[in-house]
Length: 118
Image 1 (cartoon, rainbow, N blue to C red):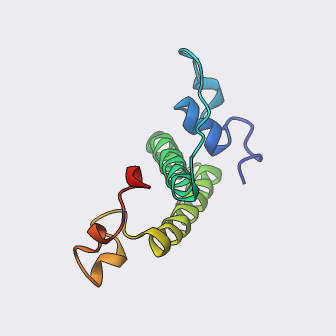
Image 2 (image 1 turned 90 degrees about the vertical axis):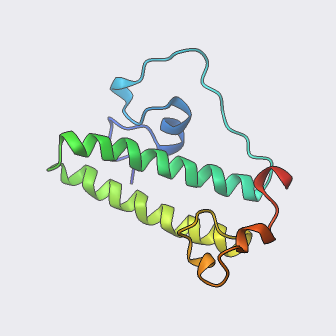
């Protein structure tokens, strides 16, 4: 999916660099790898990474709205994020107020440990 585009970093590489576009990346200090401590943190990092990639590519599409390759990539990232977010919420509970899990109980988020409590 990503390797087809020579101008983009893979989503994780773009996430830790703060820029999905190789030609626009200007290093400022050291790039640090993210090392999640457990499965929950790993899923949260993956969701954050996909969210970042969607935002950065969405900004690109604001300027170049007819780039079909980037539209397809954006849609693939969005679908992957939706899938991983559902996986996270099925296991650990809701992430946001708009989560489907909150339809059962609007205060379900208090039933699970907070990410920093794990």
